[in-house]
Amino acid sequence: MQYKQEFIQKFETLKIIKEKYGLDSKDVDEAIESIDTYKVTAPVVGNFSTGKSSLINAVIGKPLLGVEITPETAVPTEVYYGNNKVYRYTNKGIIEHKIEDLPLRDLTVKDTELLKVEYDSEFLKQISTVSIVDLPGFDTSIELHNRAIDQYLPKSLAYLLVVSSDEPVLKESIIDLLKELKTYEIPVYIILTKANRLSVEEIYECKVLLKQVVEGVIGKEVRVACVDSYGDVKIEEFKDILLEIQGKTADIFKQKYSRMLNKCSKYAQIYLLERIEKGSLSISELEQEVEKVEKQIRELSDKVQKEQDTFNAQADSCIQAIVDRVKNNLESNKATISVMLENGADITDKINYIVRNAVSTGIKTEFEPRLQKYVEHISSMVNIEFSEQDAVMLDLKNLTEAKITDNVVKTALPVVLAGVGMAFGPAFALIGGAVGVLGDTIINMKSSVKKKKEIDATATNIINNVSEQSATIVENEIRKYITNVNQQIEIDISRQQEVLEKTLHDIKMDIAVEENSKADTLGDFEKDLNTIKSFAV
Image (tube, rainbow, N blue to C red):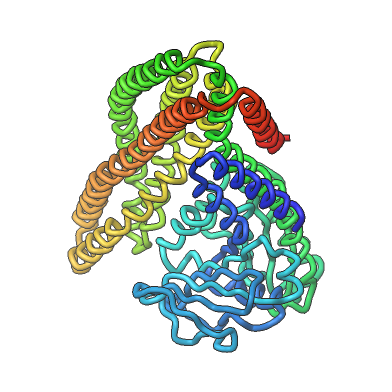
């Protein structure tokens, strides 16, 4: 694709410039490498046995995915354009299979975490930057719900909700998913499978009903496509959706790699600006500049540390507010949980949604605003530590202020929530144990009052245990995120210091150079700086 090649050329030009002046170019190499494998995901979600795998097989044009599976053998599978290779991710490492081995018959969720299928087909080539993800039915495991959000949402352009015409009703787990997708403003498409089993009137009624329900949850218009279970009826509607997603990947790609190009070029710009501005200084003036830079960096480090201490104290109140929100939300749903326990219903989906919703809301209302102010303060401090006339100050202001703040704040919710989702698994085992004990306890009870008392006590016990575990997990994940943010700030300050010190050192080395050579060198600086600045055009 032409736009990919254009960015590769820009990164390769930047690499040449950075290496010309002895600047580290590892970040450029990593960016170029990532371009080759760049993809966005389109998770296909729905309940078990709605025809998801058959639908993807129809798009591929070959039955590569197994359709006769059970919840125990349902493994998440990523399908994308490639060289006919299959990679199975297990707890022992990655195992490669031949494309002819598909569908694999002996997969289980106990030994296989993920399957990746690269396949060379005409249609997959048309959507070469889209990876279709076949996720197991949401009614198979609560962890799959969390994985669908946490693992794939940050790199997904849309979710494809598959509903069977046999049962065009959205279960609570799917509604909960839609509520979370609304938080992230991710588009949703509905795919009605096995549509040939319905009359034209019935299809119309199903489409209207599904649109009303989904649009009522996510608050935006939803497109509905109809296909047959084997893909030979109106499969083009689904292909049109995938082509629409592919069309959006170019803009997403350009935004992502423009930011990455700015980040990779930042220190090269600082270096060149400083060489141009301070190239005429004498040895004594340069020595004064070295002392000035060292002093400014020390003062900046001290101020950043004070900001970090202040933010850590604010984080304590944020964490407590989120923990309180989880407990309050659980307690407000105690009556519902008790009724579900009394009826023998599985409460894990309900508990999971209550916790995730409370954490998500708490992060957005309590943590993100404080995080934004913190990063803005840090960015502002970095920008004003240098004099108004200093080119470095102007450069940092243009390159860091808005971008750093925006990127850090936007990643807080998905990163923290992903950690909570992964760590919360053991809590579901405790819930299952408590429910089992309750069943054994009340099975022979004749008194309805005693049964009700026992059920309420179990609900209270579950709420208390989940609240305690949530408190620990939420604190750990938020602290971990703050630590990562602070480490990035420290790395950034350290790299700025290194670049500034290298600049002054190189100027010293050039002082003995003849005047005409200095003029030529200055011309090179300006030319290379203009080249880097042109990347943003």
